[in-house]
Length: 113
Length: 116
Image (cartoon, rainbow over all chains, first blue to last red; front, side):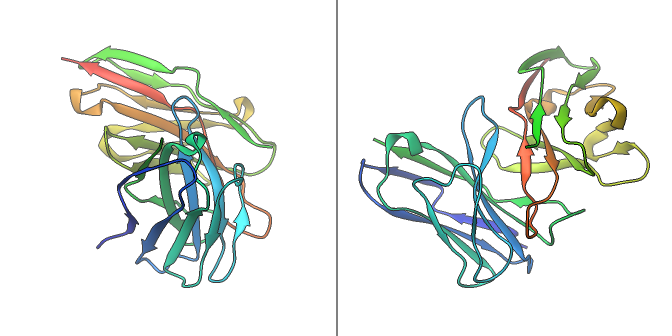
């Protein structure tokens, strides 16, 4: 069972380039999330979705866009990458909003030069 | 806004030593509490969780945590650590999102190194 799968695992971008990170889950979860992990800062929520066709902003949404066209997929887009977006990105999903745990993907290490 | 504090940023222990990692949160309502572990180069894995009931919860690999509501704390413990416990540990709180969802607020993490 795959759980939460992220692609790609590694990527190097030049400043100003765009890219899309894909997250796929096979657990039929309603809720999906994108976090970024930076040293000494823990994980911070970028955007989240509470169901197919819905998205909402988290703590650090600037510079990112998301889409949830299918229940199992949650895409994170960077329209014009900046060095400040160098980070490790984690996708997560959960069955519901409360009294449930979140399952995380393996992460995408993104470097913007 | 909810916040989570982990006071120990780096901990070095010898094998068989006991471990206690502190976690305090700030939120006045009902919370779900979690400890996640991240082994080098891997994703986050759930160690244990507290939703309600017995405030002493047991997780995988011999870890346990105690929820003390009056102290807003959820400290992680293990009686005897192993070299394989070397990892980064994150405490997280879920107080819910407007309209639903499971917004986990994470602490900054504690890097644990266990020496042979």
